[in-house]
Length: 489
Image 1 (tube, rainbow, N blue to C red):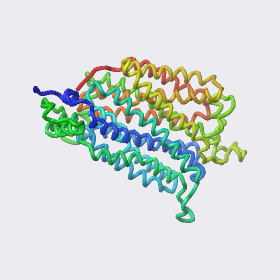
Image 2: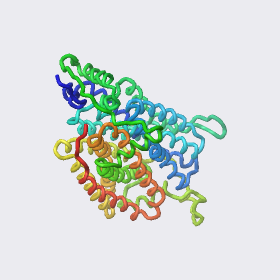
Image 3: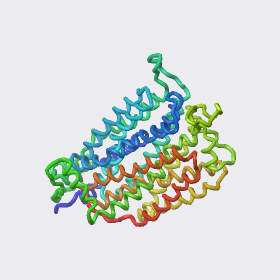
Image 4: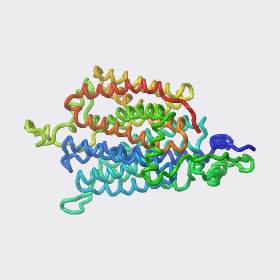
């Protein structure tokens, strides 16, 4: 049989139990990245009284993990393209889980925020490289649908977090360590949020490196071993498929030093023919993170109150006790009731609806990918989200407000893996890791920016703040239509 590339080899082997194993490992990797990220929304509320937090301190805690993810994403891609997707994901899982455990025992807000930022530096690789790791075990024809289905892990994670909260938080137990330090229930909640991460760590240790990466670094023998592993897991005999891989020349070159080599390889992303594709994907995913993640982090906080009655979304925000000023922060405040802290999660049902909506929208995206071009699926989701967001300026019926608000965040949010998979298809293997991590890192800055806007300005000028997100969605619709569709192996 003539020599073939990796994608042709994967098509020849066919889809089977080997890809299912990779799918499940990737599922738990992505689920953990979401549960760890969503911890921030719970900590903002649950630490309000213990740490006596102000608006600015709540914003610091909400953004600390995302800030760490932004900082590390710019160089993690280089490590992934140099040392492998599996190696970096495994190392990142060990680091994120270890520092997350330590952060659960921090005695004050600032040490907790610093440790959460360190967790974020590791979590960046976990969240960014999962799509590349999953995609490089699948032939081109399977990638969009596989990525879309695996994205259900995000919806499951969003349901998992409030369900765990419902099981643990009502107990309100604590363990006294000393007169000035005790282990309150939120610290144990953090531990339960890490369970998908430990499952992902076990899984990643049991699977091989991606054959695409191994061929890109001139290791054809190891790439064949990875393909043989897939063939064996698929219950097929290697002799029956008779695969010989065509030689690939690595474009990685040593420029005389680590940082010089990093700079040289990143410059390739900003050179023709890749620069236009890269920036279109970057700005689109930045806008999605700005809206979906920026609002999503604060969703448990915004909905943590009695939402009955006829009120616009901004009316609910203005009456939310979590957004009230801490005593002493506002010199004009003399009402002790308004300055009373609130550290109880009184509404964990809405976050469950939030997660269920994610799952439903992921299913919708998976179906539409079969019927429409990927970029039009993305554009349609964002367009509907924008219309719903604009409608929230006038809607007052409580159930409609909840549905529209959730869909405004969820419809773009389900597109993050799908939009990221465009980079896997339109860039060569030696640039994929760098592109995925750089785009995700800079896009997370959009999440930080959106979250900061909510934390600092939504109580001051809710309508203006909220409609900035609608404007961002309008821009993203245009960007989605111009997404590249080139397939590069």
